[in-house]
Amino acid sequence: MDNLSITHVNKTISYKPVIPNQDATIHSDLLFVNGDVLLIQHRGEQYLLRRTRNGKLILTK
Image (cartoon, rainbow, N blue to C red):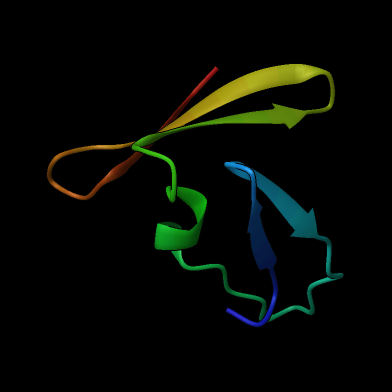
């Protein structure tokens, strides 16, 4: 979890961006800290990353 730093301030999360190396890993618990759904903006498009009850990840546009 060296690649992303989270600070909780007044129920908001501020991220300290880090340029990852080729072997960078982010634990999924860090991504889903606020629930089982995450919205991702990528090249002007919005994607939804969802964690299922079985622990699988589903990415939809």
